[in-house]
Image (cartoon, rainbow, N blue to C red; front, top):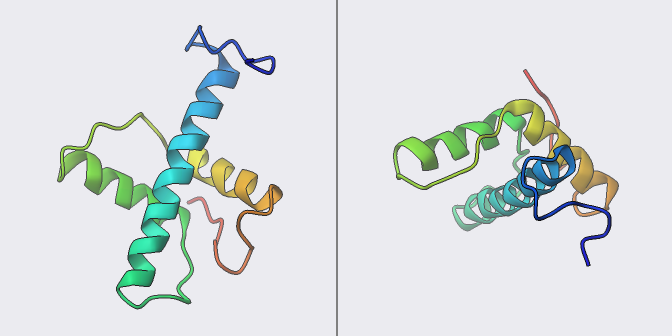
Length: 96
């Protein structure tokens, strides 16, 4: 059941948005977990921090990632907030 998305065709806009959102949700959660583990429980997470984190994973750690930009991250923050999975004070949604 693809719920209206053409998941077999990875070139559709809906599929790309879905893939990026799932990918980014995972890495936002990972970043938050790492911050909490090192004692930064109340720190705000910004679009720039997530972008830098993914770039570090990609270029310094050699992790294979999909191509994302800051607008994709901003959209993901908005989607997470709309779904009630994050709250405004915790995730600062600034796209510079």
